[in-house]
Length: 494
Image 1: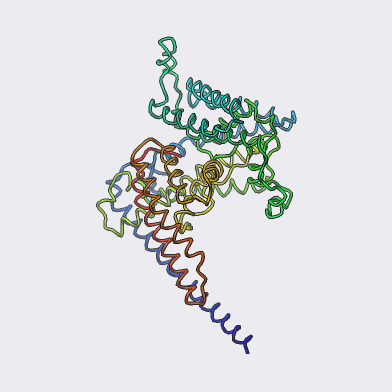
Image 2 (image 1 turned 60 degrees about the vertical axis):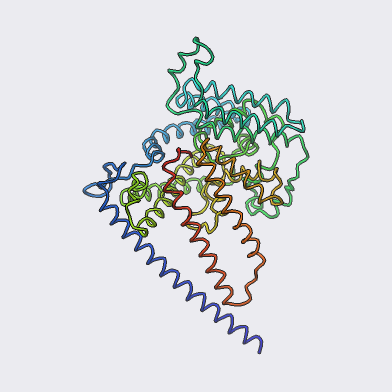
């Protein structure tokens, strides 16, 4: 009797789930048909008022292409030369590794040489500033790594230069005297102190990893291998490469410098830890097979085609940069905001994955940024974990855990988001954005801790719980839209 009752309940639940899924699919189809149709109308009716539109190459006659985003326009324009340069670099690196059986020491010299050529074009004589600061950090780490106050010194040193670089706009050679003033005429094509933000993260990573190499490791490798499906298959996942201490000889000056300026990841990342980089410099990554790397590249090409189609049909970004969205109705502002946040996601998706793809070809696996679509992030925590995922991993390893981890979570988020703000730039609006995010984060964490204890007792409870989560996701995405639109008044950062 009980068995038949349970079977009928199970069938009813399955039927209810199917109906709910069908209604959701119909809603999604209707929502996107409306958004796409209205976006096409808005782009057609207002294109004459928008800035940053250029003659495109798709369709006949060619439609205008939205090139109003500086980062995307620069990346798209330089994509052929970047592809050629990194293609040559990675080809040479793989040939030399095979021919001369190069390991960590040899590959560090080789990549340092290639990266110096790359940086000389980007920054010209300003590479002297980079190597002067990097060398000072190396000496600080080597001298004080075993001291109790080492982490304090490491943070003060790196934050100090992070601030000074921005305050003095990358410095001028004239401050060293008239004899050096002529070098200001050879500052390259790209401001070095913008890229140096990522170098600061790498310098801190080297410092911590070298500091921890002199302590007993808390990482249980055998336990990890039992749980990790990648490591079980005989491959090495990123976590084990990061947590396993490198050999003490790998913390050399050449390996350190090649890590800081490794060409494929230098401009935009993704961010990789020193331990992981050094181990893969010695033995190339085996997580991705050649077939998987090729497939990864083909998926990137598909994403690029999608972006080209998007910027030729919808002028979301041009609405934001021209401030024309202010004249629209609330519903149209919602559609533009939703389009902008999806454009930004796809932009960073393509930029980060291009450089990661080049790094994979070179045998170095970096963490994946944007592991899932922005529309699948149903709360602020999952959004920040996914958006710049490699930065999030860096923060967890070098800030969140040393600050006390989950035991001080509500306090840690204030320190972490303040650092994230000043790392991007020294502006009050960035700090206010960071603290406002924390204000939204605190109630979310409290609600999540309460809902984790909630157990759905029936089908109705489960349905209500799912709908509340969906409503929470909708609110999260909607709250991100004003930030997405207003971000074009903020400085460009990758």
